[in-house]
Every structure is written in C-alpha cells, then in structure tokens.
Amino acid sequence: MISLFEQKYGVIKLAKCDYNTELSSFKYKCPKVKKELTEKFKSEFILNLRNEKLVNEIKTSSDSKILVVYGAGHLKGIKELIKK
Image (cartoon, rainbow, N blue to C red; front, side, top):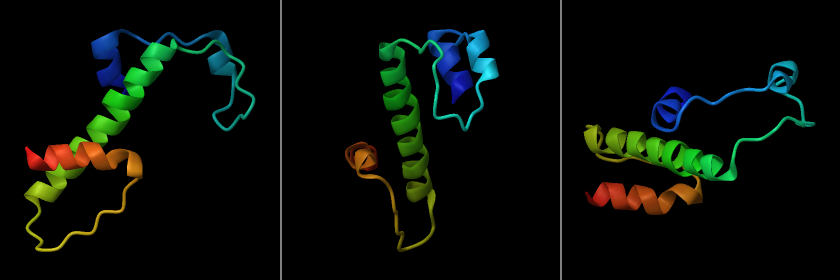
C-alpha cells in the first residue's frame, strides 16, 4: 500500500525521530504527515483497496454462500462495488 501511495502522491520522508521511535511506542512525538495526505491514505488506500479486494473475492468465488465479517465503515463502499 505504501508503494502505491508514494507512486501517486510522492515519497513519504521519514525524520530521524521516526527511525529512533519503536513501532510499539505510544509516545509518538515525531513530525506528522499533512492531514490531507493522511485522509487520502485512509480513504483511497485503506478503505477502497481493501473493499475492492474483498468484492473481487466475493464476485469470483464459486461458493453459493459467503459470510463476510467486516467493519461498518466499509459497508457503503462494498455495496457500491458489488452493484457494479
């Protein structure tokens, strides 16, 4: 996902602070990415890409019954993609 995002919006530049902060740290004090880019990542890459992958799996499945357990935030996008 990061590679696709960077191809579209440019390379994400990490600060020295990022390299020195553990992933599990709850005290992230590094400069943050612009809010606009954060929102684009969430909507285009987290929601949309996951929705497209799920809908593709549903449409190409040979099973007659499918149970999908997914977050409520995905429902609208999934419904729209299934209708296409």
